[in-house]
Length: 168
Image (cartoon, rainbow, N blue to C red; front, side, top):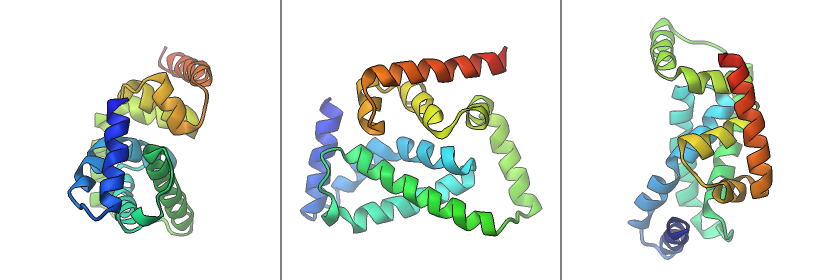
């Protein structure tokens, strides 16, 4: 709860022109942003590239921020950027051999995350990422994803069952 208040205050400070507040905003949200983008694009490299675009957009559009939930606002920007990139990528598909090798190496370092991306839908993946990888409370996850805490618990349990069946 303290982190959420600190994030809101940092957003206000950034709106008032204090650029130093941006560092805390990034630190408090970058992992959630990464998971959101990765769940859509399923590419580490693309997710890292789009993260830069997301935070540039956050910085440039801070004056438009009026939401009471900064994480949800930033994650929505990330989701929109990822969806835009996804549609753009559907039209062009190419990868040189070095990029392919780099992707395969990274892919081998995160087999469970990659399995989750393959078998879970976007919402299920985000529930697992926020709840388990980010160690967020059910209430925090519910606020980010606009669900009830009981809905988070129910859907998270279903997602974990899918993963267990696939691993077993």
